[in-house]
Length: 167
Ligand SMILES: [Zn+2]
Image 1 (cartoon, rainbow, N blue to C red):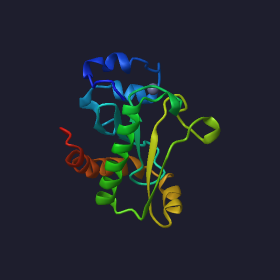
Image 2: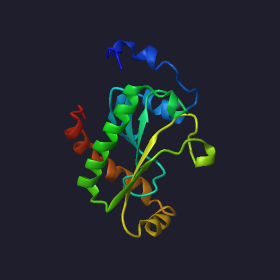
Image 3: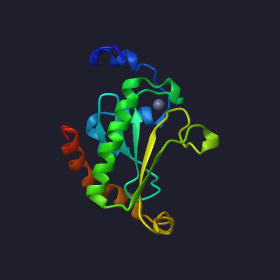
Image 4: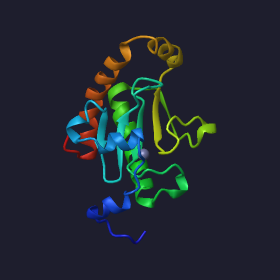
């Protein structure tokens, strides 16, 4: 990839925004609202946020700023950053929550179960033995927002230490 990294060009490169797209809306919101939007980290081409409807505790998503549905339309830099942020997320989740394993992947297309079809994103789902039953119980209660806040506060300093963010 011969393209020089020029942040001032990002407005052009990332110019394609989805009207009414949740993932674009979150990314365009002011940084002061990152906490209420559960955005953990903003990188050069991708950001990390907690999934608001988590499959397990600590379920987060790596989201390219670029509004594309198809993986083959994502540029090299975004692809690289997405995987680097996945690596950092796995490290942070391991440190914060000691999961027994991870599911990592994308649902591309409605047939594959994508919730937000038009803006691809990568799920990082920490797993524990028996967690499916645990979460189906949790999902029926108001415990989820509290769990999200607690997870956010745990992960934020670890991720920023790992990635050198400003917090
Ligand atoms: Zn979008």
